[in-house]
Structure formats: structure tokens, C-alpha cells
Amino acid sequence: MMIGRLVLIAVLNLLGYAVLRRLWPAVSSGWRQWTFVSLVALSLLAWGLPMLLGIGIHGQIPVIGAPLKLFSTMWAVAVLIVVLFGTPFVLARWWRQRRSASQAGQVTGVVDLERRSVLMSVGRAVPFVAMGTSSAGVVSGISGFEVRELEVRLRDLPAALEGFRIGQITDIHVGPFITTDYLRAAVEAMNSAGVHLQVMTGDLIDDLSQVDGTMEALGACQAPHGMLAILGNHEHWRGLESILEGYESLAKRGAKVRLLVDESHVLEHGGERLRVVGVDYPMSRRNPLLRAQQMRRSADVAFQGTSPGEMTLCLAHHPSFFPYAAERGAHLTLAGHTHGGQVAFFGVPLFWFAFEFMLGRYKQKDSHLYVSGGTGHWLPFRLGVPTEVTILTLRRA
Image (tube, rainbow, N blue to C red; front, side, top):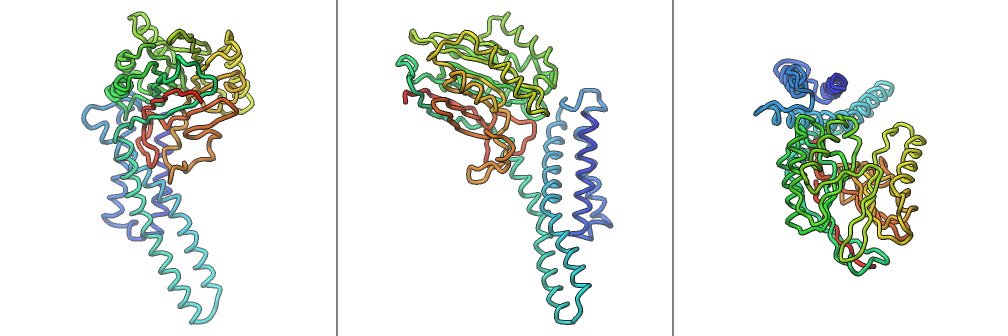
């Protein structure tokens, strides 16, 4: 996986260079060429150096590690934008050159030259747009989370649960870009908001060397009903055993943090019961049929013991679990995983087609879903989708 990432970055830069030299021929010679090569080498060094030092691709080199990886992110995004948006200009120029060569006549030739000049002038602006966009996205990505307050109106909500407040964090990804201090600040934000229950809906950590500090940050929870957490895909990918041991150590120390894996927990508030169901992540993600089977199996196990009409909150990392939770009577499902696509314009995610439930609120009959844009990220690039700590207040519909 580590070698694969370096190869992917290298291939992306080769494509970027091929496009850039068509837009700006001067980049293929002299100091411009060496500058480009040096910046590519620096971006590869950000991920290759931790590997050479034996601390893993998600490990952090003191002092220089974070700035190097931030630069690498900004550079990679800029090159990707050049490839995506510069390629059409290169292809259009090639097509016009072929068309012009096949046509005869001085007048026609002059018109084509003018059109090519305008076309290439616009195309040459692509690298500047790319650098500006990548810089703005990285700055936004490292600017910290916002606290988002929402009200969810539920039918037949018991009077005792009117005004019940839930704090949600998700997709923190403690690692190269997200520190344990950042996670602690998110937990403290929920403490300050006076929530009754805190939930963490998966993808907690990427760098396993920081498990202890991560668990200590979760242990700062002061909500009356504590914190309930579930697993995401990154827990399975990075090292599930170490993370499970971290949660177990928290429980042994008496911390108010509990992990739910295809199980439920019932809490009482003002004399009323609220069942919280937590489901595991369906790992057969490449096969939709197997993934659906896993979700259905998780639902059958996790929702055992629920009573008809019982107020039920479901925690699911993957938002596609929502229909399974809804058909089993979940009044509210909280999810993450998508990061909201991390890029949105006028509130509409750029990659809206990637998930059925991408960002924000959804509803099926009397069942509600909220998909968070994520509290952290594994790639610090966001435009229009800020990181968030979500505070949801239950109201009677």
C-alpha cells in the first residue's frame, strides 16, 4: 500500500508534466524543468522519508514531517487539477491544429490562429487556477472544525427526551494531519455544548503509534451518558486488534466510553429508555451484493431485543446502512464515512454521485438520517465542506 501510494503520486506527476509542457512549452527546459523536478521530489519525500526511517507512511517526523506532507497534499491536488482541466485544452489544441492543417486558404488559417491563441491563453491560466484552488483547499482543511447545531424532529418522541442533545464526531483520522490534541478539542467542544450523549461514528485513527493518546482524548468525555463509539473501515485497515485493545483499556480505567460492535446499549433519561444500536463496517465494499449481505446480517444481530415503538438511535459508519436501520424501526441514524465529498459548491457536493447519502439530512417515512461531513480527514483539502462537530437536539415533531 505504501509503495502503491508513491507510484500513484509519481504517475500523477508524469501526467501533470506532460500536460503542463503542452500548455507552457518553456517548462520542459532550463531552470523551469529543474524546479518542477525538485518540487516533485519534495512531494515524494514527504511520504518516502517516513518509510525509509521505518515509522510507516502514517508516521510523523518531528518538526519537518507535517509541513512536508501539507506541501505534498497541496502539490498533488494542484497537479491533479492541471491534469483534469488542462487535458481538454491540450486535446482541443491538437484537434484545431489537425483541422487547420487540412484546410486551405489564408483567411481560414488566420482565423484558426486567432482561435488557437485565445484557446491557449485560457489553457495557460489552468496552472495558476490549480495552485490557487489547492492552496485555498489546504488552508480550509487545516483551519479546524466548526460546531454545527441541528434540531431533529421525531414523531412520538417521549416528553422526557424532548431537548435531548447528542454530540457527534466522526472520521477523525488521527495521524499525519490530525493530532490527539485536535481530537481532545472536539471532545471538549461537545462537553462545552452540554450534550447528554456523545457518539463517535468510526474512522478514529490512522497512525497506530498514537492509540494511547487517542484513547486518552476520548476519555475526556464528560457527557452524563458517556460516549458510544463504533468502528469504521480505517480501524479494520490500520490494525483492528490494537484499537480494540485501546477501547478495552479505557473500559478498565472506568472511562465513560463504550464500543458497540453489532450490539445495542439502552440508557435511561428522565425515566424513558433510549436504545442506541451500533453496527460494524461492511468490509466487502468491492462487491455490492456481499456488502448488502453484511449490512443485513449486522442489522439482524444488532437490532435484537428492540421493542416496537422503542425510541432507537442507530450509529452506522457507512450511510448506506440507513435503509436497514429504518426498516427495523430506528428513529434516527447517524453516519459519516463520505466526508461530504470534501468539496461542495453552493451546498451541493462535487462528487454527489459517489454515495446515495452523501451529506446532511435524509428521511424515509418517520426515520431520519444525518451524514456528517466529518470531524477530521486523511487528506487536508476541503472547499465548501468544513470539518464539523455536530450537536443534534431532539424535538417532538
